[in-house]
Image 1 (cartoon, rainbow, N blue to C red):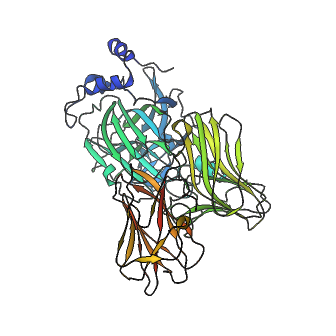
Image 2: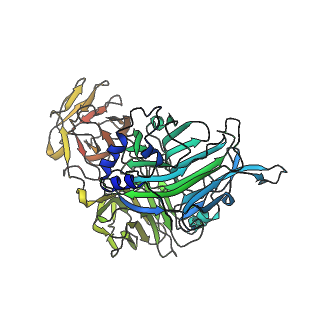
Image 3: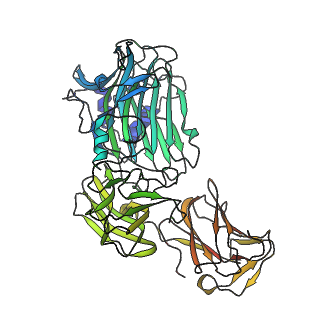
Length: 598
């Protein structure tokens, strides 16, 4: 049992205050965080408020004199940044009635058998992944001499790429129990190099469609008393990460990239020559961690990681990041029949999931493990295509604490929206999966998977249509009326002017992501390579559409972030000499919702 000693007067005051009031109390004396010490209350780290609304979902108190290997992996590597990481350096000890994780520095073992002792450290990594929420660890940093890189951070794991983690995670990946690759997002709550007098925060994406360099924040750490235990925390929200030291906000970073996936938590102390500033710590150096705690709360956000299979750079790949592919066959992640495809036909973005049926395999399931999510009632949707010869195909939700729910996936050659409503989660976890069975040659394609807590309502069936000659529509160059019908039989416009373009400029009521569709008017004399430019909040994207083939109707251009107001637009340029550009309507809808009926 762990016993912590609190000053009686402080504990009495803390018991009477809500989280927000306690935060105000702690912040009332932080007049100069850049250089001044914090108050003794905050410095001691004994009463640290958490952001309001959160409930404790997971806690590791490091009490049992050994690392709980059912919940944690050892960090083990060969020579990395000049030092080794070994499980022998990681232990759980009890001192003065307090148990803590101890990650020790060593220089007394010849790990590579070259006759010279090597420096080494180590770390511990959670076996489960955590998503949006508030994270906190209470840490005693070593600060005696340079050479120990100490950190509390999150990052996914992988069995085929990145650092070696020992046998446990690799074996679980070979048995289809965990994703073979979950390396998508990194959040560094703190990196502290011993005796270097600065801390660092960070936020990294393995697929970067915007710069995250603004998340890198190196700040003067002299306000922390490194002779004391320090409470390090961060709050991960959609599009924002907020970093705390002893309950006081130190830094925040906001981004617009729709990037999300639950990740593992790492506690590391690296012996190294990269950040050592030419020195090495003493033989008693170690990083100590009193506890790690994770808090969650219901949130209005999609809880599916890599929901449109874009991570990996939007290119075709046999590795499906953040998802588990189970087919009952050992160690076949590159031949399991499930892959990411980038062929220009994705519903959202540039890639989608394809599951190929295999004769002789009873069932193939691509699934996502959602641990420590808030209990509640959820709605699951996805876009799918299925070939007609598939014996069975289902979208499923199970291991929720309630009975399994599923929906049979219909045969369709076009992207079709399916939904599974009223999924009741009572166990703080769920598994979301797509299961198929069929002969060789049959396929299921999946894109844009979304899981929302119904407490906040389902995404609104909102849409905005800008028709030609309506509000928000404009033209450049010479255009004329066409006899060809458009959206809902409306009139359309055409141009043979090589410099002409038509523009649809929405007036957005608020900042939000929108699915964008353009109405294609098909005619043999139309532009076979029309240039469509989408300007959104963060950049521009160019697409090309053949207006001479297929049927007239809506064409999906993708999902984009738009700022409030009129800063975004869609333009259709006449791109082929001697042909006609066609202009009719553009539709903007909230993600997952179709354009208006024809």
